[in-house]
Amino acid sequence: MNLKKRLIQFATAAKKASYHLAELSPETKKRILNEIAAHLRKSSREIMRANQKDLTLARRMGLNDAMIDRLMLNSKRVDQMADAVSQVAKLPDPIGRTLHTWRRPNGLRISKVTVPLGVILIIYESRPNVTSECASLCLKSGNAVLLRGGREAFHSNRAIVQVYAKVLKKHRIPEASVSLVPVLDRRAIDELLKMEDLINLVIPRGGEALIRRVARHSRIPVVKHYKGICHVYVDSSADLNMALRIAVNAKCQRTGVCNAMETLLVHRAIAPKFLPPYARLLKKENCEIRGDDATRRFVPTAKKATEEDWRTEYLDRILSIRVVRGMDQAIEHIQKYGSAHTDSIVTKNQKAARKFVTKVDSSSVMVNASTRFSDGNEYGFGAEIGISTDKVHARGPMGLEGLISYKYIVQGSGQVRT
Image 1 (tube, rainbow, N blue to C red):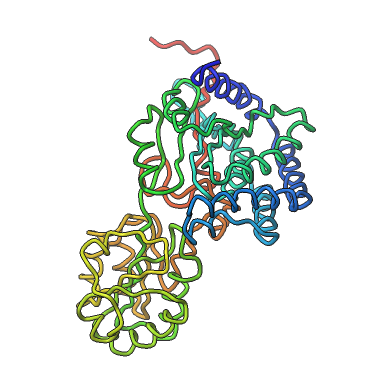
Image 2 (image 1 turned 90 degrees about the vertical axis):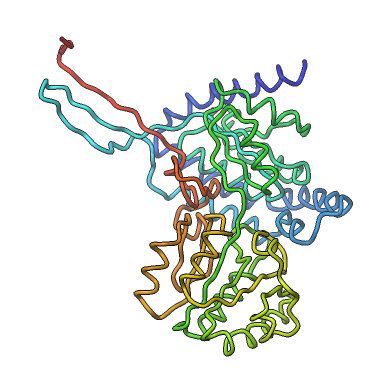
């Protein structure tokens, strides 16, 4: 069988499974997800053994430390994966909710009711926890999911999907409800992106090159974010200790993720007090600084930042720093170089905070908090299907609400239109 026919069969099975999922009761979905969470914990050793195969291959492929970190699973991360599924199970069911009801003068009663999207294709790289997050959210929202992970995480992804398959089979639910695309050939993605009759939404998660390629070739609607160029602006009224904690956490807590800070903007009035101790903290974290001329006066060890640095998502222990005249220049910088992902202000001035959140047009805008909180689990969504910087359909961390649509149900008593 050729590649195209094989993938059509695969997507067709997912489409059929989506009709079955749309009929499941909230209680059934909750019970299934709780069982999956328990089986993930029981299967922790098998999942980690599979992950070790991927890590060995990844090191041979020469993946950098940030990519290795995204790929790695340990007992804590598997437990977190299971916890996320349990959290999704507890969330209110998003399907079958009546959003609005009204009656027309002719007696027709119209209701707007939530429904699943159908089949969702996730294309992603490296992070095997994404496999479970997406699968759990799709099951809860009554959607079938096609998972096309990167070859570097194939063994890990397969082990996780096998856990889902085992529980689904027990409950006589089609295993095609959660499917790992078995073809690693990149041509498979191009073929899947043509299947607008079988797949309802595509969500690419990974590097900018992957996302742009998907958006360019897809005939199916795509939810995307190209980059995570996140900023923290330290205002002149900021509490120095708070600003130091936030700016270290935003950059160093985990560098290889899209909500890590890539550029720090510092008001010139606070720069002499803030930058030297901040540079010392970054040195302990082995984080390189690239700064403008003003930054380098306070941090002589900083490398000179180039125009390209302001546009770069490092996903590494590198940070760009710019000293600004004030908030207006900070906002102008974010508007010019930002990616509409997540930006934060540290300030005691509530008027300044209101101005920042009004004028910065990003999917998440923080006040006195780390950009690292821009995350579905941290927002109380249980997990996330991805982060969207689009404005149509979904924006920011996508939980269950980003995986549903609606339909109108019209009830009459024999009315005809004249």
